[in-house]
Length: 497
Ligand code: BES
Ligand code: MN
Ligand code: ZN
Image (cartoon, protein in one colour):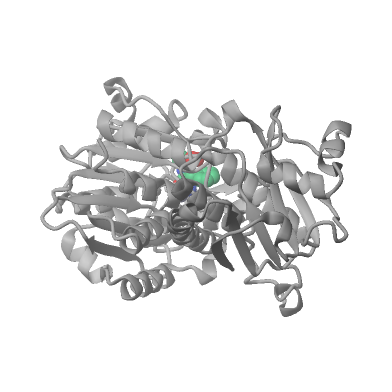
């Protein structure tokens, strides 16, 4: 899909669907007023009757029959001005694009009216909202459906001010880049585990490295053994798929210290010997969402040429039961030298992260951010509206919070107080990998905290937000690609005071 920006008027644009935006409780803006006039007051009449609504994300369709140049007019609500955030705007763009597609439009013209955003920000939100709102995972649909007729080929963004075109364009370009990586993350997460093995993820990382001139290194089992990554290898021992520890570096920041991004990539989490119930086990193909997010984020950093040095670490393996699998009662020795008693082989994410975090410390990073579908308890604690956040650095937690608000991928902090550390004490090893039912999100983070040394650290638990069972604004049901946009924003604002 191509998105272009032009100076022009909505009512004279020849297009399959013209999109008009309306702010709730306000008089129509100049574009809306002109379009409405051409339509003999139809928009206002339908709004009054309640056939159209200005509520955020609501859409309606009018057939102008020659009164304006467009075949269809989509009216999308932006809600009240006081609540009109960039994310609301993203939502409206997603809804409008989806409505145009269902109506059979192949091209759209949007004249964003109402919001007083900076044109670059508006352009970015528009590109993100429409691209992500139109996203579908069609790889496994038979050909006929795959080539399904309903597809938007182009979006034209119309602005009345010729001077705003280039700023809009720049924003659109940024939004396209960011949305493309988020879509890649969704594709990866939605793919069956048989087709998204650690080897495949390593291949994807290599592909990104080629495209964006990143350095990539993939540690194989032998190498991990030499490094003493006993936790990652322990989890991998039950699988016939060879584990990979993927390391991608982006250097755009001269002599600045590295920012380390660590993403959990369990390509299938059966639970191992502590096997999961079969209901919904298919969902556990999404247990590599953290890895997909950090690969998308580092690709974005490179594509946007951010002035930073970044390393992305993706420990990748399956968690399977077999005769060679690790077992409850085992003690694993990690790369850091610390030992972990296994009480539950289903608490495997923290194990692979323990070794990846220790490896991240080798970079003496300015900050470590890890992201993982780590605990079912996170859904109990926060539901699906927020990603859980814990960590040791108030500065970086605040930056992450702000990135969450900007992107709509919101985070909510949970405490990491000392008292919780007692819950993972082991009788025979340095710690145990499962702390019982109390504070499951927190005890998982407690274990991770033992592997980040003194480095500032933020942990994100996306177990509840990586997948959605219902359609959400610009996020159709399925993989959300969460974290990719969040981390990208965190990086973009990294040096902002
Ligand atoms: N990958 C799961 C967490 C998860 C659960 C993600 C549900 C998405 C939906 C993780 O590896 C896991 O199994 N965690 C256990 C930890 C427990 C054994 C201490 C859990 O949450 O039950
Ligand atoms: Mn598990
Ligand atoms: Zn898992």
